[in-house]
Image (cartoon, rainbow, N blue to C red; front, side):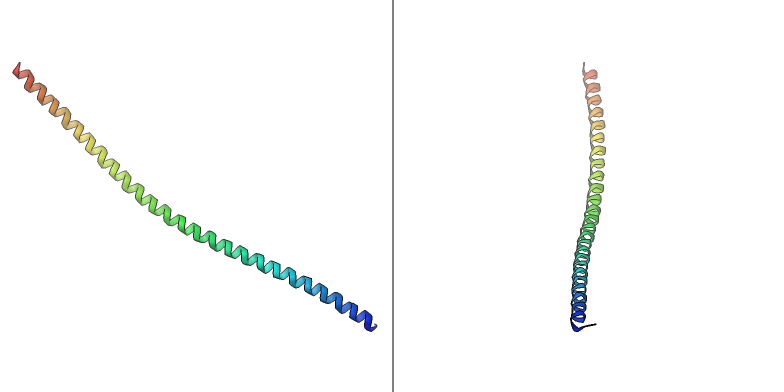
Length: 95
């Protein structure tokens, strides 16, 4: 094998090696980007889980308040009916 053939072989090997390194660097960069994206997604998911918990608690409190208001409205309605019946009874006796 002549020096020229050896040099050509080394140059070709160096070119293949450089391309392989470039592909490896691209793969590492892509993997790094995907890892960062996954970390951002995990942070977003944790934030959403926390927000969901907060909203569920707020909904429970609001539902409890709505029930109390409904119960109070029912009680007020019952008392109004009793008061109207009392007034009618008093007016009927007065006639």
